[in-house]
Image 1 (cartoon, rainbow, N blue to C red):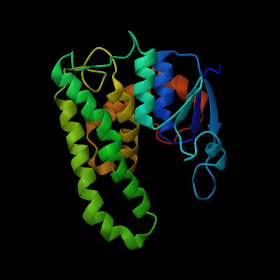
Image 2 (spheres, rainbow, N blue to C red):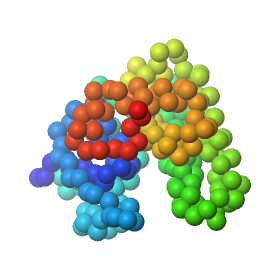
Image 3 (cartoon, rainbow, N blue to C red):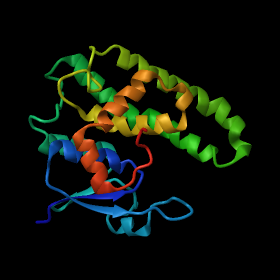
Length: 219
């Protein structure tokens, strides 16, 4: 049976999976894919892994698993014992709900608006549309994140303020990296500090060594 392999597209959501794998210290292989020039789209080789041709996708034994959220939850539930917290309804209800909310907020609320910003920025003709529909939403999202971080105990490393990471950390970190890149005027100091602290972790740096250059690293 084949081992665990991450199919990693450069400058993509796959970075969050690379970070998680390094935090888990799970043995894995990585196959890096370069984006097409000039479109920036994923190469057709990814279709050979999964029919949608997107990244991240992992293969683990006989399983082919796409979608960031599915991958994060799968890896934590299978390999995260004692390393990554996996709150359930049996735990403190607020932590369970918060983790569910922020895990899904990353791709369900924030990431679509960041994608809209990228698409609309391709043409000056769409600036008015961005100003009306996208800009206010990104501002609201950035303020919501900053407000949440203000509620955490002092010197918290993780997004829910607990002693260990949860799925929310690995889902939110990429979305927050892109938020800093695409809507910098709305991003608060706690948001930047949180992202910088995670990017300074040894596991994150090991991931960068394996994945290669990554344009969302904070300077």
